[in-house]
Image 1 (cartoon, rainbow, N blue to C red):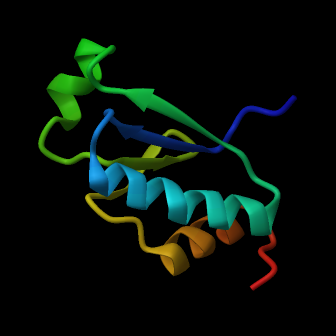
Image 2: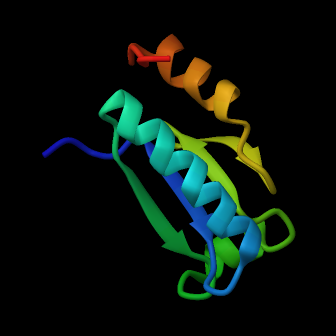
Amino acid sequence: MTTPRITLIGKPDCHLCDQARAVIERVCADTGESFTERNILEEPELLATYAEQIPVTLVDGKQHDYWRVDEQRLRKALARRGIFGKR
């Protein structure tokens, strides 16, 4: 199993996190990528770093977006790193 290249950092009951997840799921369905989620309420270091920015999207461990996920920008970031999207 390969390590997911996309990480969504958020928390429960966060409507922006739900919207970000929907965009990420759509991109992953098209590209064959997978993603993982991390909860800032369970990881104090993430809370200290990202509390005012969630949801935060990381691509290959680097911060990509926060508050909102731009679908086209995410697709381009994945394509630049060797993923070929269908759209």
